[in-house]
Amino acid sequence: EAQVTQNPRYLITVTGKKLTVTCSQNMNHEYMSWYRQDPGLGLRQIYYSMNVEVTDKGDVPEGYKVSRKEKRNFPLILESPSPNQTSLYFCASRGTNSNQPQHFGDGTRLSIL
Amino acid sequence: GEDVEQSLFLSVREGDSSVINCTYTDSSSTYLYWYKQEPGAGLQLLTYIFSNMDMKQDQRLTVLLNKKDKHLSLRIADTQTGDSAIYFCAESLTGGGNKLTFGTGTQLKVEL
Image (cartoon, rainbow over all chains, first blue to last red; front, side, top):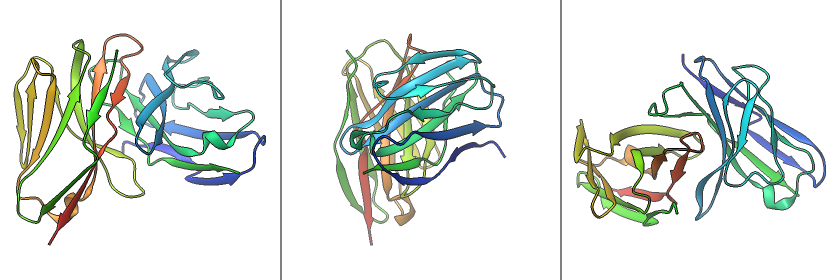
């Protein structure tokens, strides 16, 4: 089954404690992306990756890092999380053709205390 | 600049039609999408339309695009309680990795 898998689904942690949210897709997609969803703001793109070792900033990259060492994985790293990063995070992927729709994971709800 | 707007809430009765509206500002949109988000779940692609089309129908779903007014709508015929969810419209723009710009989402509540 074609899937985008995020882990963990839920995490409560404290300010400053580094965390990583993993994202893996089994569709051999080149393009992967991270979004955060906040009430009244819809989804905003954090970072995206066009292929292995190719990453770029989205609209709200501050406080986040990503890496793309393998095609299937695109982890999101919060080196020093802060309360304003409390949000619902989605990973998405699609194929090379930019007109293909993106497939989304089920989301990761982060609470930073 | 990019801006996609939707009304926040819509309530309809079961069996009626629902119409969810969306306006966007960037005329360089290539594709426009409708996603559905059920509670605790990710975003499920419902349908999408290429920017040179006016209408697309897929079973109970009808998408209308008025490119002149930059207005997109999603009509759900015979709305069911299982259609209760948040609906996001999104536009795909050239450049920036063809990112999706999302609206704020419309919460659809279907009442018996």
